[in-house]
Length: 293
Ligand code: GUN
Image (spheres, rainbow, N blue to C red):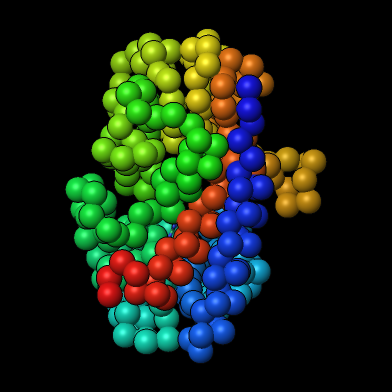
């Protein structure tokens, strides 16, 4: 059994990106620039955005954090999105989700210029991804593909079960795993909250990608010997053992499942660090106008 070290892979890719930034600067171009909009003070969002900003600094990107309180109006937020669309100094930007109830996330996403949509959430990017055209692939699925690649995990002809059907992870992941490429060429089953007999589907899977947000959902008796298990869950659980006062718990009961696996990702230190790195890669591509010239 191999525990996939997302932290180490992410550290390696950080070095690769930092090297590329040096070359960009040496050739007289400016730093790639990522902007992030954060509304309110949700603990998880604060942590993720802080981590994104810190990673920008580490690899030599410029970053701009724009904050609003929970009571910002939808119009005010949309106007900021439009301003960032028109700001030639910003290569790409994200609006951290979730947003307060009174703001339409879909309206915000669709207002982002798809050429700066480094989260890959705009329908143009989602649509292009689904038919295999160059686009910004959303960061978590892209990070998982990169892990499969770097560990040279065989995917062709395998049965991949995706747990969860979110727009951010489950749906794009299922689409990518069935694409005619590597990683891909899988037979994909998507299970969700209304699926009957999830355990039976899981037991037949060669690859399980768990993205339900249900801590410890996947148990040892739901996994066949030799399976590859990718855990996307990051539920915050209060803890008196950590400085922050919480710990992250994945969707996989790691201690039971790991002994049966050929490969498994831990939480934390598996998919999480790769998500941020994929966002950085998309920003680099945006800066180079590599996808939309
Ligand atoms: N909230 C949870 N994950 C993400 C993400 O990848 N991007 C944004 N913008 N918000 C999120």
